[in-house]
Image 1: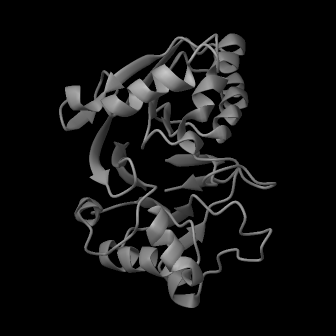
Image 2 (image 1 turned 135 degrees about the horizontal axis):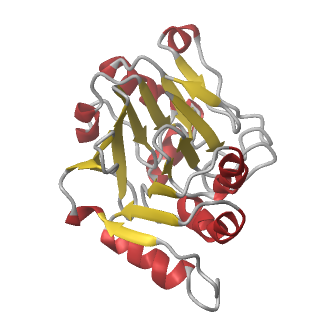
Length: 254
């Protein structure tokens, strides 16, 4: 399986990173729709799809603003059907505010699906080729984590939460081939991480020690880190745990 990193920053883009968006070509599945989703157009020009699904973790702008970019994507590729999955209140906020006629007057034609209306273990593909579980995360306004099974491989997507090894979501992180976990801050800024509902490196490492995924990809990086000389650096233990720092443009095998 391949995961393509379209956007690996949190909050706003930087010179090197766009905001949260990841693509699973084997499932035509997008995780979040930050500014990085503009890269989906080139992807679908080279590997056409008529239908895709998008799982939203929550409705903060760095995770949803790219939904407006799909107007271009659907105009120049074969993409015709987009289903956007999330919590009802978050989907309503997107439809009422992001697509407000004064902000974005020509919205793309999307299907919005409330996860609460679906069974807790959801086969997104008609043939049941991949399954999705979801659960709540601790974050201002609420966020969702996901476990996605495709081709016998298990991937978890955990973003916009404060990592704690005793958090309820950790129990869902079993037998993972790939854990995608936010790590917005280095250890020096752990107080700011807790204040803003985000994670820091030592706390994410504690979670990794507990669930022992085959591979961990650290995402949702602070867009000011490089500018301020605070980029994350992994130590020998973290490298031994197969933790890596995501970069825009990465194609991760798992």
